[in-house]
Length: 131
Image: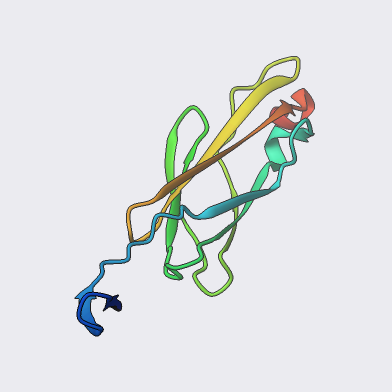
């Protein structure tokens, strides 16, 4: 991108103009929305689905994102919708609710990184494990 600047010199009543190239870079990270689960929700661990929406003001080609849920997973993102819906691996079976935090991280083509986390509880049906 180029910018043209002009200045009027009062000593000799002349105008001087200069054009300079300016480098404009994207410094805005992607916007991440964790659609499901919502914060504070209680979800069945066996049926747990993560639903994410990611958008970026400049880079429209974010094709994957990272998920941390005790383990690190790289997940595909539909570039036409900016959405993803996936089943994550089951957590260990316990007799009570398990407090869980999921962190989603996305990087755009300019290297800007955003993270979003959600805290919720997972419950597991012991009878469901018996078959």
